[in-house]
Every structure is written in structure tokens, then in C-alpha cells.
Amino acid sequence: MLIAVASENGEVFQHFGHTPEFTVYEIEGGVVRGKRVLPTGDSGHGALAGFLRDLCVDLLICGGIGAGAQQALAEEGIKLVAGVQGTVDAVVTGYLNGTLKFATDFTCSHHHDHGEGHEHGGHCKH
Image (cartoon, rainbow, N blue to C red; front, side):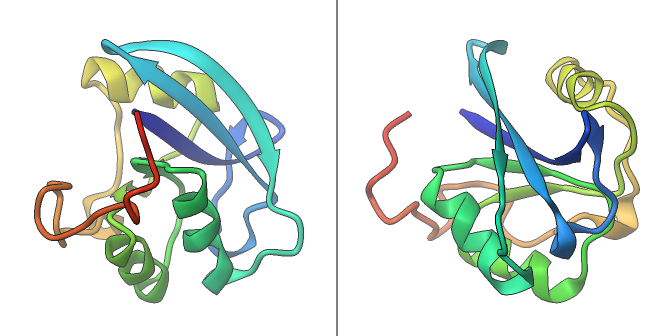
């Protein structure tokens, strides 16, 4: 499983559409097996969902996110946990152990299960 966190300087970035980088965690058996920071370059609102799809990300953790971006992520089959604050390492640890605090009014309720008609284009193998 790959988890991406919208980030800047090790903190959760609060405006998804202007995310300068993603901290991407490789999770295996509920444990972090790898971590890398990837700059988004000049990617804007519309390109960020595709950027995450191309990385084969399964879950995005972020601060604020608009409805259009939520829909774009849902169309790519990427689960969303939004309304999150803190350091990227702490939020991933919180997610993995079930203690992560998030704002429910920012979460996407559309297709939480990858088996509901969403595929990562068939090219992701993890």
C-alpha cells in the first residue's frame, strides 16, 4: 500500500491544490517500509490526482481539499483522509494505528473500497 501526504517541510500542507510536495510512504503489513519526498513541480489542482495515480498511491492524507479535487481522487480510486494537521510522520503513524484525528466534513464518502469499480489503470503492482 502507498500512502501520500500533502506536505511542506515535514508538515501536512493545508491546501491540496497548491501542494508543493508529497511525502509517500510504502506500507507493508501495517508497517512503514519506505519513505520518500516527491516535489509536485508546477502541477495544479487538476494534475495532482493524476500525479498520485501515476505513483500508484492508494490513500491521500491532506489538510483542506475542495469538492472538485475530491471527485478527481475518487475517479482515480484514491481513498481520501482530509482535514488533518501535524507532522507527516505522526499522521501516518496515527492512520496506521487508528488514532488519526481528521475533519469529517473534508472526507470523501464516494467509493471507500477499491473493489467498487476503480482500478489504477492495471499498472500498479503492490
